[in-house]
Image 1 (cartoon, rainbow, N blue to C red):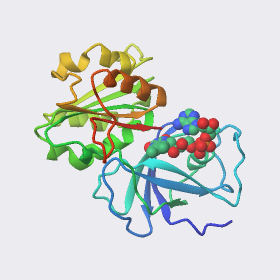
Image 2 (cartoon, helix red, strand yellow; image 1 turned 180 degrees about the vertical axis):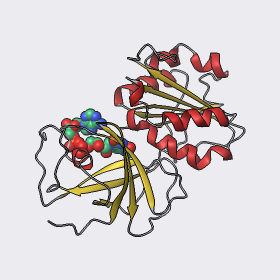
Image 3 (cartoon, rainbow, N blue to C red; image 1 turned 90 degrees about the horizontal axis):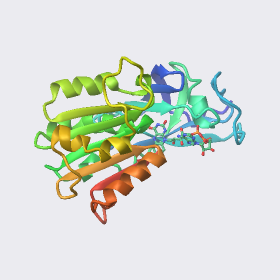
Image 4 (tube, rainbow, N blue to C red; image 1 turned 135 degrees about the vertical axis):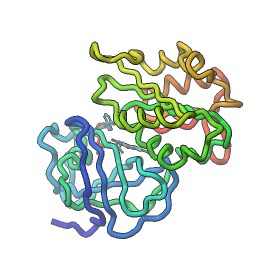
Length: 266
Ligand SMILES: Cc1cc2nc3c(=O)[nH]c(=O)nc-3n(C[C@H](O)[C@H](O)[C@H](O)COP(=O)(O)OP(=O)(O)OC[C@H]3O[C@@H](n4cnc5c(N)ncnc54)[C@H](O)[C@@H]3O)c2cc1C
């Protein structure tokens, strides 16, 4: 089997649930610098086995071809050799079903270029930062917080994370710990199908925002002058939240045309 493009090894796998994992890889060579929130390409050849709980591929992979997809880095921006990713399995997908068959020590490809415009350092110092995520959309915020949280003591920083069940809330312990220890950081998890033990919000993210939870709990209103919003995850949620913010005058950010709304769709 051709492994010529493999340049990294699996260091650790943490299964959050059968279709959600934290994947840590060690690269053979130190990677270039990156900014919190950026992504790298991961790759495996089509000849690699798919996971036992995958479903038939929509488009069968060419065994000789390296399948590559982008994944947000969850690590702090100071990392140069070990990179963490938070990955959900698309059961009929080409690459994620193969990533879910990896074991510690297995080899894979990671692209040399780490890139992306979804970066906390694009938001001005002093502005409040709201980070909204569903699913693996939480990964770039973990990088934001691990990299920058102590640098922004003047900003309120809030993670709003939506999921179906509590077991789907990736990084729940890390985010709860941060909220308990960092005075300007707040964590708002919300579940749409919680069991009876859950005493948090039970709302869709869109509804939680529209019901002024941020205003009531943290005195943060949707004001583009003061508050920058990052929105990352499922396309539907990203579209609904963006539409709601645009009604308050938010504009999509681009480095050449700065705005206050940053989006990343997975
Ligand atoms: C900038 C960026 C960052 C990303 N970061 C992450 C990340 O941190 N973690 C992560 O898990 N994913 C992330 N993704 C998504 C990832 O790149 C792949 O698209 C995903 O893993 C599916 O790839 P696949 O080869 O398994 O499926 P494919 O073979 O590409 O797709 C198979 C089928 O599934 C559909 N499909 C594709 N993606 C999804 C999905 N997410 N949910 C449901 N159906 C889907 C496709 O439309 C297609 O019909 C990111 C994407 C982008 C653009």
